[in-house]
Amino acid sequence: MLEEELCELLVQSPERGLEVLMNRYMAFVCAIVRGKLSEVCGKRDVEECVSDVFYEMYRMRESLDLTKGSLKAYLAVLAKRRAIDVYRKQRKTNNVLTSLDVRDCDVAPSPHNVEEAVADKELSLLLLKEIQELGWPDSQIVIRKYYFGQSTRTIAQALGIKENTVDKKKSRALAKLKQAISHV
Image (tube, rainbow, N blue to C red):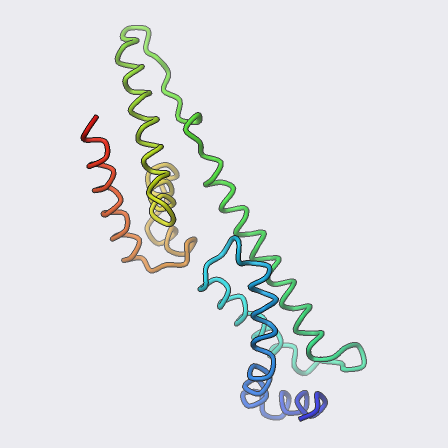
C-alpha cells in the first residue's frame, strides 16, 4: 500500500488506517522513543509515549500533506517531539529526587543537649543512606511519601505503577528500614 493510499485510508476508515499505520511503523516509532527515553523511563512510559505518537497522528490524519513529507517523516518528528517532552518531564522529576543527599539531612544541634543532637544527626544520616540503598522504586516511594508528603495516588502516577503496588512497596521498604536501623 502506497503512502497516499494509507493517508486516504486514515481519513475514510480511521480505525483500519491506524491499524495499518501501526503495523507498518510501530518498530520505527518504538526505536526513536526508546532511544530518547531508555535512560530515564521504564517500559510503561515508553509504551505510553509511543501510543501518544500514534494518537497524535490519528488526530491530524485529515491535515496530513504528503508534499511536505512522508508519513514516516511525520511519525519521526512526532516521536522525537513527544519523547523529548516526556524526557524533560521525567528528568525534572528525577532531579528533584536525586538531589536529596545525605548532606541535606541537617539536624541543628540543640544548645541544651549537644550529645543528643549529634546522635540524632547520625541516625538521620544512617536512615537516609539506608533509604537510598533500597533501590528504585522503593527509595523513591519512601522519599516522596515521607520527605515530600505526597499521596499514594500522586506517587503511583509519577512512577507509573499501581496505587496498591506503592502501598505494598512502602510497607516492605519500611520493614527493611526498621530491620536495618534496629541494629544501631
